Image: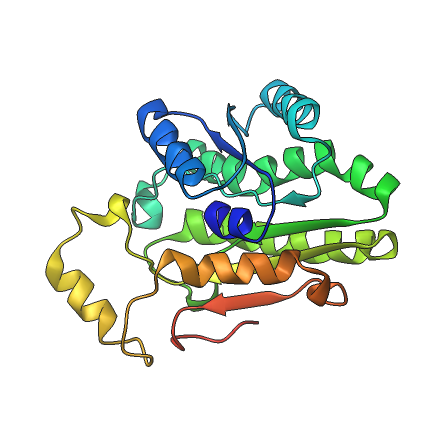
Length: 230
C-alpha cells in the first residue's frame, strides 16, 4: 500500500514498531523506486507514541490526509477455552484502540481542511467466521463497526472511511506455513491464483483518490472471489 500510494504521488510516512532492520530495508526500497516520505517508529497502541508520531510526520511532510491503520500482533488460533481475556484485550488494542488513537489524532486536521481518507484493514476472517479464531474475529468485527459509524460521522466534512478486507496474501511472514495448508487454500480461490500485495495497494490508491469521494463506509473484499463484502 505504501509503495502504491508513493507511485501515485503521495508522500508516505511508513511506521514500524519492532523490526528496525526490516523497516529500514522496506523504506530504502520505497526510496529507490522514486518514493518520498519518512520512516517513523511508534507503538500505535500507545497514546503518547501516536501523538508524537503524528506531530513528527506533520512537521516533516505536512498534514496527514490519508490514514491507513494496519498494525497487528501475532494471531494464534486457539479454542475458546484456551484464550485468556488478556489475549482478547491485545486484539482489541491493535484493531480497535489503535485505529481510534490514530483517527483521533488525525481527524481534527482533516475536518479543518474538509478532506481526508481513512482506510481500515479488516480480513476475510471476519466475514467467514474462521475458527478457532474468536479473539481476532471479534476485534475485527469491532473495527468494522467503528469504521461504519465513523464514516457516517465524518461524511459531512468531506472525509471518507472505508475498509479493505484481504484474503490470504502470502508474504515473508508466511514463509514457514506448511505447503499442504497453502495448497488447500489456493484450491478455494475461484480466480485460481494467489493475491499479491499490489492487489491491496491498488485498492488503497482508489479509496484515497478523488474518484472515490462519494464512497464511504464500504467494505471491499479482495480474495479472488472466496467471499463477498458485507
